[in-house]
Amino acid sequence: MAGETFGTTADGETVTRFTLGRGALRVHVLDYGGIVTAIETPDRAGHAADVVLGLDSVAGYETKSPHFGGLIGRFANRIANGRFAIDGHAYALPTNEPPNAMHGGPRGFDRRMWRVESADDKHLTLARRSPDGEEGFPGNLDVTVTYSLPEDGTLRIDYRAQTDRPTVLNLTHHGYFNLAGEGAGDVGEALALRRHRGPEGVG
Image 1 (cartoon, rainbow, N blue to C red):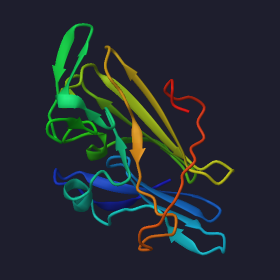
Image 2: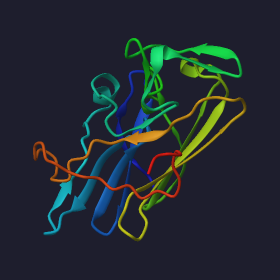
Image 3: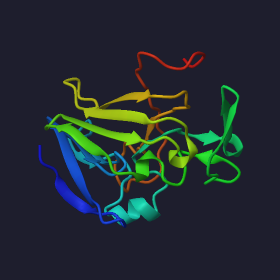
Image 4: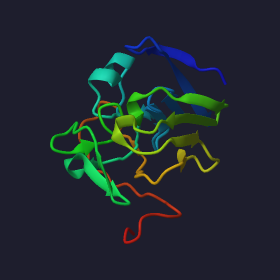
């Protein structure tokens, strides 16, 4: 599947948008940050709407976005005081939300270009190597993320990662959803997540 040019980064890299589709469901994903820019899906009455918050330019994602729709890593959420230790070795990270490190640092995974490993109309696999020391984290880390549209009408995101040194890792997708559709204002909604595995004590 060939994508379409979405824009250019401040570093001059071309950003491509890929569109996955199954039935009336459409999902748009960038190779910049693995960002899901739109999920177009019909409501109960069959009216299609975009149900995630997105921007219409690369510059917006580079400068204005609070991680809209991005692939967050190496570590989603905050690391207190930008410090952690592994096997007696202390690591210091950039504190991009003082006093803490947040969402992988100033240039976390959602602000990096990803390599397209495979793409068709129902699957997109992105990959990148996060080198040892990137944003202060130890170890070379190889990550692949696959976005797919199974027959049950859902969006599935699968993460795989392998490192050559002990490190910390917490990957997630940072989508902002409004199931009433773009521009519908604030609504009260509940989200159910079906998962096979998760952290102990979370249920």
